[in-house]
Each structure stands twice: as C-alpha cells, then as structure tokens.
Amino acid sequence: MSTQVNQIEEDENKYLPENPWLSCAPILLAVFVFVMDGTIANVALPHMAGSFSATRDESIWILTSYLIASGIVIPSVDFFSKFFGRKNFYIISILLFTLASLLCGMAQTLGQMVIFRVLQGAGGGGIVPLSQAIMMESFPKERRGTAMALFGMGVIIAPIVGPVLGGWITDNWTWPWVFFINVPLGCIAAVMAKKLLFNPPYAQRQPGVKMDWFGFGLLTLWLICLQVFFDKGNNADWFNATWIRWIFTISCLAAIGFFISQIFRKNTLVDVSVFKNKEFVIGTFIQVVMNAVLYSSVAILPQFLQSMMGYTAFLSGVSMMPRGLGSLTAMVICAFIADIVDKRKMVIVGLALIGTASLTFGFLNLQIATINIMIPNYLMGMGMGLSMIPIINLSMETLANSQMTNASGLQNLFKNIGSAIGTSLVATFLTRFAQMHQFMMVGKLSDLNPVFVQKVQVTAAALSQYTSIDIAKYMAMYAQYGTLIKQSTLWAFMDSFRIFGMSCFILIPLLFLFKKSKSREIKKS
Image (cartoon, rainbow, N blue to C red; front, side, top):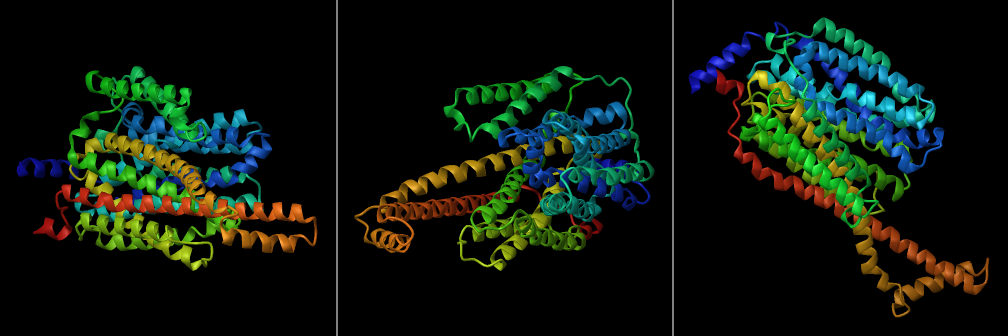
C-alpha cells in the first residue's frame, strides 16, 4: 500500500512547475477581488436601492442573485475545466467577472443590476475552487501548508476589508465605484494568469466531454429554492408559511435527485466518489460550520455596533479591521510552521480562539469601550487564520491531484451553503431571542413594581415642564418600554454570540478522527 502511495506521489511530482510561487500572484489577486466583492456591496446596498427606487426586500436580490449564480457554477468547475481546459476556464472566469463588474457599475435599473450580478456570480463562481485546486497541485504535499497559508490571506482577509473599503468608497465617491475598482484588477489578474499559470496534462481540455444538462437543471433548481428559503424564511415565519414549506420540499427533492443522478449516470457534472474519503467528508463538515460562524459574525457584529452602540456604517467597518490584522498574523505564523507542526493541533488552537472570542462578545454590554471590541476581533481573526487553511489541507491530503478540482468545487459549494445557513440562523436568533426576552421582562413594567413606578414618576416630573402631566406620564412609560426593547435586543445579540462560540468548541473532538498529518521533518526521516 505504501509503495502505491509513493508511486502516486512520484507521478504527481513529475507535473509540478519549476517555480510554483509564480502561480501565486494571479491566484491571490483574483481570489482577493472575488471574495472582497461578496461583502463590499453590502455597505452600498441602501444607496443602490435608492438609485433604483427599490424597497429593501427588492434590493436584497442584488446580493441573492450573485450568490445563486456563483453557487451553481462552483460544483460545475470540474466539468467546465475538462470542457475548456482548466487554465482557459480560469481566465474566462476572471474576464467574465471583470466584464460583469463594469456592467454592474453602469446599471440603470434594478432588473439590469440583477442580470449583471448573475453574470458576475457566474464568472466569479469558479475562481475560488480553481484557485484552491491550483495552489494545492502546484506544490509537493510537504510544502502545501505554506502555500495554503498564502491562499488564506485572500479568502479570510478580503471579507473583512470589503465593508471598510465599500463604506469609504460609498461615502466619498458613489456606489458604482464599488464595482468599477474590480475592472483594472481583474484585467491584471487575467493577463498574469495567461503568462504565469502552468497547465499540467491532466488539467488540459479533454475531448468528448458532454454537458450533463439533467444534473445541471437539478442543481440549479436545488440552489435557487434553497437560497430563496434562506433569504425569505425568517420574514415569512419559516415553516408556518405554506409557500416556504413547498420551497423547502422542492429544494430537498432536487438535491436528492441531483446526487442520485450523479451516482448512477455517466458523464455527470461532478464526481461524488470523493465522499467515500472520510477525511474529505469530516473536513468539509467542519468548514461548513466554520463558514457559518464567520459569516454570521460578520453580519451580526456591525449590526450590533450600529443599532445598539450608535456607530456609523464606516466606523462599524473599521471596527472589523483588527480581525483582518489577526488573520494576517496567523497567516505569517502558518507560513513558518504549517509544514512542521501537526495540522490538527493548529486547527484545535484556531477553533479555541474563535470560540473564546465569540463567548467574549457574548458577555458585552452597552458601556463597553472600543478596545472591548478590538481584542476579541483580533483573537477571532487569528483563530480563522490558524484553522481555516490547515483544515483545507487535512481534508484534501489523501486525495490525488487529479481529484483536486472536483473536490474543491464540491467543498466550496457546501461552504457557501454554510455561509447562507449562518446568515439566516443569526437573523432568526435575533428575532426570536429578542421576543423571548421581551416576553420575560414585560411583566416588570407594572404598577406593582416599585422600581418601575419610581422611574416613571421621575421621568414624568421632568417632562411635565413641557407638556401636561397625563402626556408626560405616557411618554415616561413609553421611554421605559423603549429601554426594555433595547435590553431584550442586547440579550438576543449576546445569546447568538454564545451559541456560535460553543459550536466551535463542539467541533474540536472531530479533529481526532483525522490521522496525524505528515510534517516536513517526518517525511524526510
């Protein structure tokens, strides 16, 4: 068995580029621009809605259309790589994303924007899984930790930089520039990819590849229904709404049909045989939960700072910067120790830091200073950097290079679903927990509570100088009810932070199901 493994590694090493670091430049640039674009538009969304005379619910489709299109393309990257050749498809993806960004900035109506965002998502959907696969294949296994540490700089830091940059551009320029900045960067990335990316024989165009239209149709139906379910479920009271139940049922049936078709049919869109690999399945599940925690915290923390602490949109984005600095610190650490230290230990430390930071957020109050936000953010950034890249390596370590593109596409598909789950869960948590705490406390607003009576009397006495005593008393009672609403909302934020923190600690035992990863020294010995 070990002889076969060594033979596979020798065969794969024959196709390694002479200087794999040259491939990193276009990959890192393309990944950074694509991932950043997923969050940079969030800050400008109200401005876009105003320009298009759209409601808040209608403007959400600017984000949703992008996610649906990219989600459909992500698991299809292996097929398109065989049809066009992987290098060609990678360049096509960058150029389509760049062209769509230009069109998004020129959009005049909401309909145009949604169409152009679909094109942008379709172009960008293949960038991350292909970049991940190319980075993994460009280096021998004992050097992949260092390579993926660099890859992680784009994947982890870009979503944090996005809101800050988007807020600054929107405030100082206009929202179209949120998309226009992608154009020169995308063109540079495409030219560099053409010049610098290597093209191994197994990644070149394969003749006779046919499109799996049946599987593609089921995949599209599954993801569209699933995205609508996540987007509209909370506002529609989830399964209490008949149409939500129908949408969820259709999504589940389409997903089951898709995977059955991929198992029993020939010339399929994806190769589901990678799910026979235990390490791949466990690693993918851990990344799904981690993505849910990451994107839920990115959504909930700025909302907490703006609605509860009175921060502006730009300042709330700036408050996320320590998370980027923490990730950068972790990337530097990973670059030096990723190929030496057991990757399981790095992931354990990373998950512990994320969980600790989330639990710290779960014990904040409205009298905190900025430093109380910055320190947990820095720890969370370090945790993401220390855990995200090693877990990718652990999940892919036992796969052959020829399986990387397909496995990366499937893994990123489920990570996207994890992000959607986290965002929807946190919206539901805030709504339901706030209602629960309000119900628990509202009984205290009674004439039988001497503290409540005293506060109403003091406030009413102060207001009676400006209006009648009856109106002053009514306003005083309303002010106390407003305080109750604010307190119940604060507790809802705290409960949500604590749940996501505990979920990280629950993941740690799963890491012991992995075999001890090979370090550089172990391999040499």
